[in-house]
Image (cartoon, rainbow, N blue to C red; front, side, top):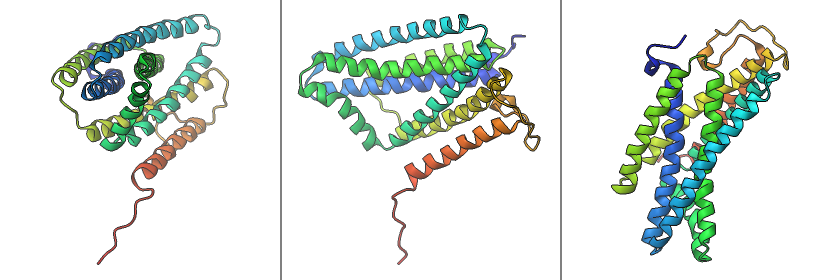
Length: 271
């Protein structure tokens, strides 16, 4: 049954968050590359960035069609494939969370953008600049396709996902205008910090649902574990296997927080 209020569903929030976060990162990277080109006297290369970025968006759409075709052709092992897709999405989400936390300081972000562009400018290689732009956008496009597929697999109601996608795209258009045309910068610490937290929650959810799908496919055992409540919207099921994998995700999150915010920091000496 399709929800009458898709804007209030968990699927809507997840879909909106995914498209805005992935799209925003692509916009920020492309905007920073363009700003770097203009400030360094290479404004003529901006067209190359736009052209290869558009090609990356088209390639992402082809990736979506390809992934859908793989699922259509694998009806017999559908639950197994769904489980693997969700676990892969959870792993990529943890990687993206780590990447975001690593760039949360503006200095690291500037160094990242400089590294993307400087080599191409030094060698005056337009192709290298185009490939850098393509990969920056396609990485986000590929992740978006993977995350939305995992999200759709875990939902019986696509209306919330579709509504979140549409509203997210509208927000991205406004952000693109604000960042590219008005040249306004977003507070990266807040943006990266907030989206890291949301993506980590999605990784936790996909990890639990992925294991559950593999159990449904009889690829993994299913051991009852009633000490925790069943919360399907968070991918929490009353089995030892799902609880164990989600515990690993939580421990991974704790390690990332320690490495990015506490490791290597000297304690303040009291006078």
